[in-house]
Length: 88
Image (cartoon, rainbow, N blue to C red):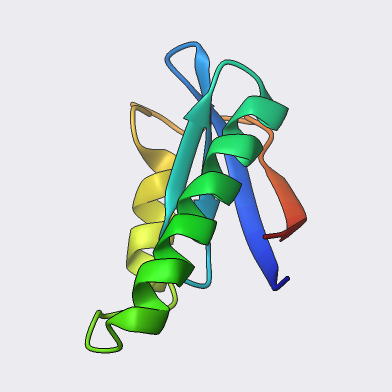
C-alpha cells in the first residue's frame, strides 16, 4: 500500500479529490466518497502500470494544481481546501 497526497475541493455540489503524485482524480457526493473513488482509480492505475511500464505517470505541475484550485472562480474567494494523506 502506497501513501499519496490528495487535495479536496467542492465543485458544483460534488467533492473532487486530486492525487498530487499522479494527477488521478476521484469525484463523489461527499469528501469520503471522492476519496473512495480516487482510491479505486489509483489501485486500477497501479495494476495497469505494473504490466505496461510505458504509461506516463508524473506529479501534477503547479500550473495544473492552480487551475484545479481556481476553476469556476470569477474572483478570489476564501474557500477552504483540504489536504489528506491517502493509502491506496
